Image (tube, rainbow, N blue to C red; front, side, top):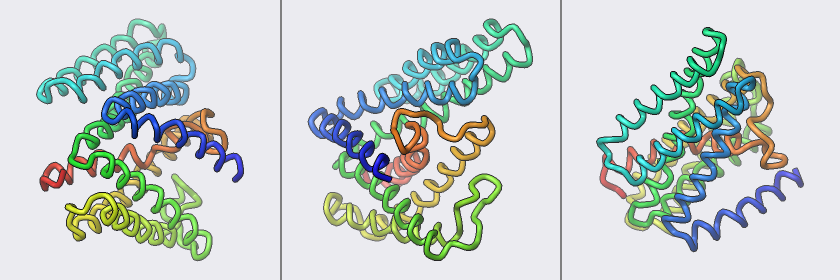
Length: 266
């Protein structure tokens, strides 16, 4: 526990000043670095026998797609994503001698574009909302408050397994505690930093993001089980890798952006 707390403090001490003082550019740089680390972790899990090929191909196409999403014309994003998928499939076909393995490598790298690059890219997009930093704080607070509520309620009351095949420790009682915790977290941020966000929407966002955060956590657990690893990486002692820590945020950020955009809340 001490190691987990210390690594979290060090991480926050580096990230928060970069975002606060760097503003939009700071967020984009932090997310860009996180994407590269996430790509490295994903490639090590998904294509361990082709790490060099996989990282190079996914990093180049991924950063190109990331820059297109946050700075390019919206209508071109689908085209760049399609081009990236074509490049990665060709990479698997021509650089991996075994045809079956090459197909698996290309397919997994293409999935990495969606899982790591596209989902991560919604954080800089959200930061462009009015009160962008407060919206980022909302996503983080909902996620952390949900994790905290789920941890304590799960330990105290947890009996009924939520999805044992994928995550044996998660329970419905923990989910309920996390759901309440996320709503409380959303209301606190709404009160302190997003006064123009109606309370009703803060409550809905708290509950909605909690559900998708749990789904993101389950998806990450599923991937690790499928690839036979305990953690996605080692960069955060006591926590594992970047993808271990942001698995929920990868799913909550797009949902928050879609909700706020459709209802013109940002």
